[in-house]
Image (cartoon, rainbow, N blue to C red; front, top):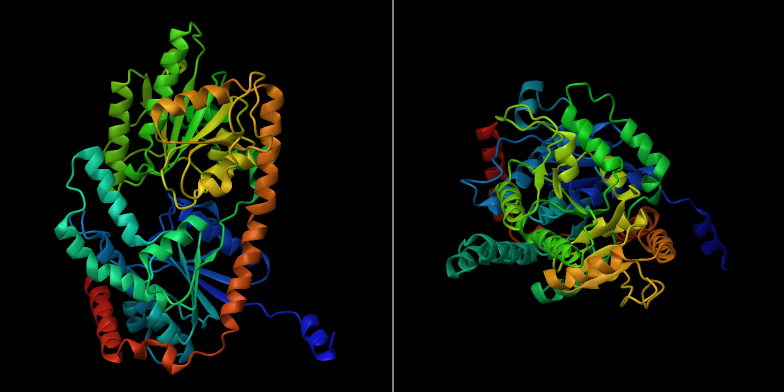
Length: 542
């Protein structure tokens, strides 16, 4: 090795100052990726901050609440939507409000004392901020070119899935489930400027990351004019968080529930383990997640058991992120409850957090609890989800979305050694190894399988559930071992942090921004207009 090269190899790489910009730091797969990525980089000595337009301390990951991560809640009075519509333009406006406030904070740091205190507090809810080496923008790309130009900072954009495709799939699902009008001419015309805007702003980023090969392929179809191919960065999970002892400590850390919190006691006991064999569904309460498939397959499986004379008790626990600000969440939970009733299933819904404008709830009596076949648990505390997956009577995870972009929940189940039954499309095809067909001895034809990938049809899933329930103890132990090993080898937070850190350093290696790369391609007049509009919205609504 040449001396110069050897010296360079021995030089420790400097630590970076990194900003993560995420629209709504709630509880979901996208938020978990941001939190885990920030934690992984912070553990390696990097200076990390998360900037978000919404951060509800009662509905977020613990690391964003307990001070482990620095979270800057950039407050705005801009609503999430207008009359339960126009969510995309309002999300873009909120992101510009965040960026406008960040610009003021950067200016205040660069030129201390220039802005009087009252004026600074009027213009931004952020303290003066030191410049960043690189900015990681997540989900919404609207501000990417402006970040690059007006802060002279390189930008990495992470896309979970093109918004133009998400919007269309949601409209189609609502039309199917609720009789709403599907994607029509008016909606197509409405989407045209936003779709071009999304493609242009994504293309202006220095590096594009996506969460799966499935999303990477969709990118090529959705954005044919992109100048660079996205790099796949699989989200990861920390397998140590799914260790039984660690999970018990996390549950204990929830603290004393109080004698009046009978519902919380009931939920905790259900998650820690019951005598009833249990199937688990974990997803946000959204129409596109297709949770009704789990209900229908479960009902069919129960019916088949009863016909065969096996009156074996079986329970389905449906866990999901739930936000009363989101109309889709409310409607989806209502529809699932009605569907469970139509299927003749005995069910109840238990909220960990008391719901506004509703009388205090109490836990069902023990005899009623034992008779329940389906339990809906909206917005569980994070510690109780791995507790539920690690429960000795949890038999399988039912992961229902079709064409899911990636899907972090199957990894969580695999880390707990729980078999996964998933739709045979999208990201889960890259994470779950199909075990094949069942054998007469209670096994499967593929000894390395971690679950089953099946067409999302209730009849097919009912049979697959039966195969998973009928597994021998040795096959179950073998599948649990294969699942845990696969997560550690390919989908750990360590592997994800390696890939993200490499992407950030590759981005910085591009050097300083040149004028021909930046927003002058767009026109400075448009940039100034957009910033003035953002300031106007912020100061008007504040």
